Image (cartoon, rainbow, N blue to C red; front, top):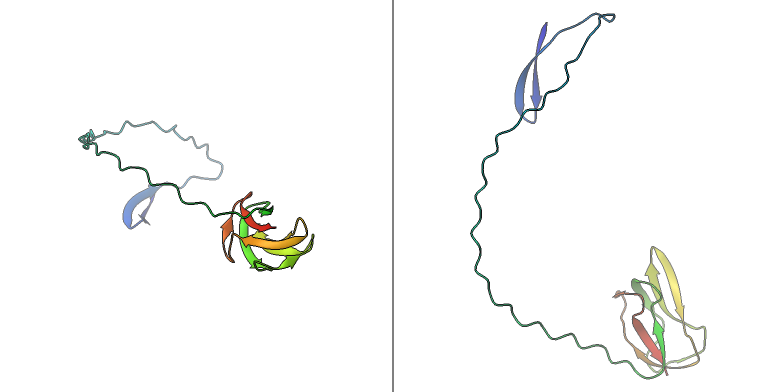
Length: 136
């Protein structure tokens, strides 16, 4: 029998290993479960209930001008805003560049008109359906 010292996670274990011949019939005993003694955990005392603070008022939504809304088709980040309020655009002109899933998507003007409002800014994270601008 050979003896070894094995270090596991900074703790040393003295191990004895028996060498057997390659053609020896070796049987391994099935592991036996051992019940661990559990210390009863102390039950925490109930904390006093504090009166809930009043809910904050909902954030004011961005005012949206009347006209044709340009909405985000998917969640993403606004990389570029290609127009300014007051610019004349034609249907199909690029208004915004939206990055979604590592792809740059050009958001086009749905109609011809004047940019009435821009409701986002470069670098903003937007959700699908968010109104990015309005063409009046």
